[in-house]
Length: 367
Ligand SMILES: Cc1cc2nc3c(=O)[nH]c(=O)nc-3n(C[C@H](O)[C@H](O)[C@H](O)COP(=O)(O)OP(=O)(O)OC[C@H]3O[C@@H](n4cnc5c(N)ncnc54)[C@H](O)[C@@H]3O)c2cc1C
Image 1 (cartoon, rainbow, N blue to C red):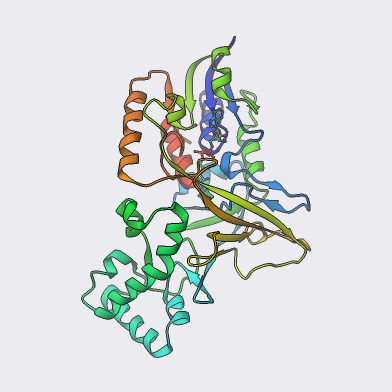
Image 2: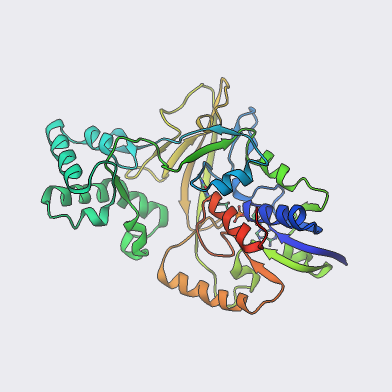
């Protein structure tokens, strides 16, 4: 029997943050169990056979508006400034995403694009970010048609592929989020801080977990080891339904199959990510050298195929799934020495900065 102050299940951003805070902030002895054979959770990266840094679980770009999270993570990494750009293939053209004035001009005849631009600016003001649901309610028939165009060409096909469901089968918040940007800002994210860890994510995780109070055991499933460990506190960042042995049924997740390729040419595509809203089975292709800035005669890309089966990546945003999650949450509320944190335990899509923020507040030890 191992006796320990604190057991952390999972070594992703949530688990690593909690372990670091418990060890360095409270001077507690921490054991981290991770069932995969590596640390970093879905944000882990590694070199492929040609020595190119890739993200096995899909491209991860760090962005945040939180100075606190940026400063906290900066203890464990330096940063390489990086602003991600995404192009979408629409009607045979590659155009910027999110849909902005440059996209408008690339897809519409010049006179019409100019007229729509003026209408958008007059109605919402320059630099506004207008959700397409709001655009659909516009007094102007032209703008309503534009909203429908964006919905059909940018959103509908991608969403249907991504979720295997039509938008009306998903929570309305999914459609509500799709924006039209009234500016020429081609960056995919608008956060004040956008960067990549300069030595990669796995190096960042190594430094977070490199503390004399922390022991990390990879390749070890909590459910197989729990009877041999006695911990005063447990932080569990795995799926909440698994913890309760799927008592009320499985919480639905959407999965992805990744097809990684190494290509013997320096560049493959004109932007970090290209989205395919309307064609093919894959949703997008990412070229990693944009993200890392690495120089190499080869390049590495990944195609993403949404899938019903596989690793749990995205909680499926439907009201009935939220209700099911709440039933599990009620069980969790009655526990006294275990805390459920992270994207799997909270059945939430978190960006990395949100995962860190939630872990910091959930473990109660300030950064
Ligand atoms: C395709 C994709 C792209 C993304 N891109 C971005 C992006 O560009 N920017 C961004 O900010 N965020 C991005 N994210 C979100 C990011 O991956 C999450 O914010 C982050 O992974 C959350 O960390 P976590 O620790 O909560 O979960 P995870 O990273 O999933 O870590 C949980 C860990 O717990 C382990 N575990 C589960 N059960 C057990 C068990 N029984 N025993 C032991 N270990 C267990 C798992 O193996 C896993 O390693 C992306 C997500 C996906 C799916």
